[in-house]
Image 1 (cartoon, rainbow, N blue to C red):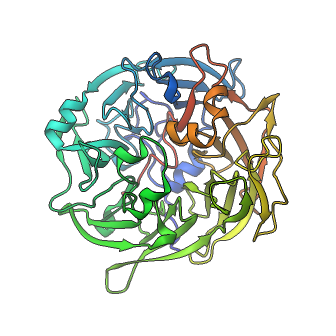
Image 2 (cartoon, rainbow, N blue to C red; image 1 turned 135 degrees about the vertical axis):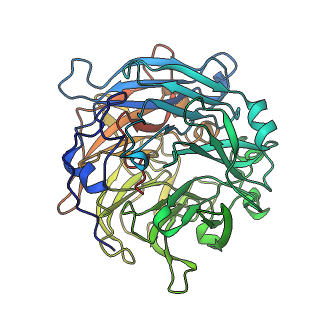
Length: 492
């Protein structure tokens, strides 16, 4: 693993949305680690449970996470989506550290693609970061007409000032075509699609590394299928992805796809190392319950190898004899030392030391709910190959609130010392696998991280209860800091 650039910068960088300096973000990942202030505001996507879509609206909650504030751990404002049934999911900034050095750019717009409706919202976070307001709506018919794409997912800012959004499939939700939407970074008009030539049948996440003229992307499955819940037979019918893809960053053409096989089924979050000189990264395969390392080979093509394999547990009370861990999210610390992952079914978060990227070492683990909790007694462990669980795990209560579901979305502080977690995956899947969560709502928790030796410890004084919302309960998915974070910013 290549060492990060340790170049100092005597310029005070953007601390909160709307401030000005030598361009947005930070000069390097190391500078962000050294100079970033502690996170104080967080934007969370809050989704209405499936059976409530006809009468309630999704929202984006602004949460005060400043421990010195009188409103610490409270939702201080809610932006309510004007339409029903959107399914807010991920979000991304108009600019990030990829535009650092451009004083004409300011991080002040948050782009919110909608998983179900194909609508795209743009919020103004610069005028009042504590109470964002609507700036622009891009309607589904415009998305479909101009791009032929649907199910918009990951949004990243580009060094050009444009915004790029990955789309999982075509406008009909049937797969066969995925792609990327380019938005103008000022008024957010649709400029064009990014890709040139053939594209994979399914898309999902992406991360680019311009110094090596490459972008990597992953894939989910057919929206017409997963929007109605998970059916195992759909996997055998090829309606879910098991490949990752590599693109020429300059020509926008797909140059290589790697079939990860059965262990690579449903590759979701894909990350290059934060070091812009790196030629390797990781992707988490949800159904395969694995993490693969991808890397550039001496002949300039790309390879992939499985480096983390979480075995299924033999159980009773489940639809199958084996319960996969379901690795639904991965995140890398800015110093590229640690990888964190969520096991949504098994219920644990794991911390791996990736100093040797080919041999990740488990150094921290904590259970946050999951399918195996004793008080539900629905799924019982008969055999655990790792020897960690005997019969059941214990349910988690924080400040008297029972934590439903399993750990899912993660966000890490820029200094790597605090890990935040929410527990919603996809509203219809939440309803299918954790029916108590839509009834009682999601939570956000905070975990203290030992960045020296490794280790995870729950902060029992931190709880944001989205089930107690006056407009709730809500299912809470992605977490985004107002000044940029470990999943929003890319360095050139």
